[in-house]
Length: 380
Image (tube, rainbow, N blue to C red; front, side, top):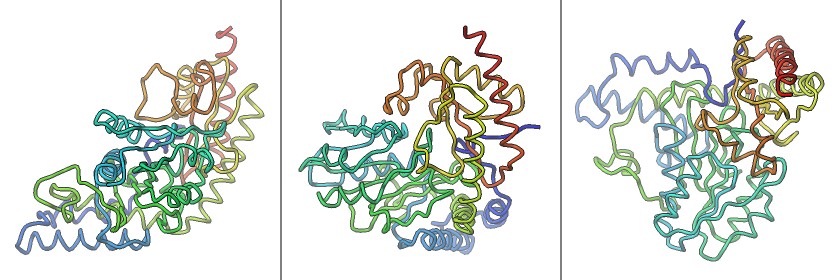
């Protein structure tokens, strides 16, 4: 059997999402900006999707922008908020952010902004004290992810946002990995901008959402026809918006119970791996981590070789971010956490969703132990 344990990269499309999208891929095909009945039908679907997504997030519909995914959302937030803010040209991001945030900040640096990357502890956590130490009077934006795509650590985001708020600094969070599992209430989190990507929780790839508080200026990056109240020009993908709203609604249903159930599976799986694989170490926070996320380093074993061996035996997983797949460099997340380069290069990440079973995870743990046992003698 094939066991898919790479849902941090992408998740299976949910049937309910496809069914919600189907009318807008077929009969209701109009341009939502067109002033005729075909366009009006598409506009009605788009407006309804916006209202439904806003209801799940607890925000105003007019504060939402449909995007093409997490990368666009992060770029739009980091660049847009920094360019629009009048207070200064200093940006703070964490050292363990997704490349979409890090590269956006580095782009700003090429245009005269100062960028600081706040460090993390051994679990990949940004502490309020560390964040406070790098803020300045001219800091114009802080961006810290809600949960790590590589090691699953959930940040103490409300406490971090409170530190920024005391200094009057807008705060963006990349909530892409958190969206399937955690409540995304911007008011409770204390953030002014939040971005997500639909394919992490059941939509086809290519849909996303950016929320920006109406009181927070944000410079649009795409200009043209002025769609979405000028926040993102370009003809909207109505079907993608409808699918994203449906997926958000589904994810919010029984979220707490499902998160608890999957976390129990994760804990049993982690315990099995640590018991069966000598020298294996869990990366990320041992408690404050995503329910469906496990990640390990396997000293003495190439992470890439382990992945090949696992896939040969029907277990599909990854070494870290899919956006960095194929790179010879060790994970910037793991090195920021203090792991030596040679240890970081032994990483494997096994992530799963609501469909995972105890039998699948037991098979994966047993298979990982067999693969490592085969590779270690060769590693010498």
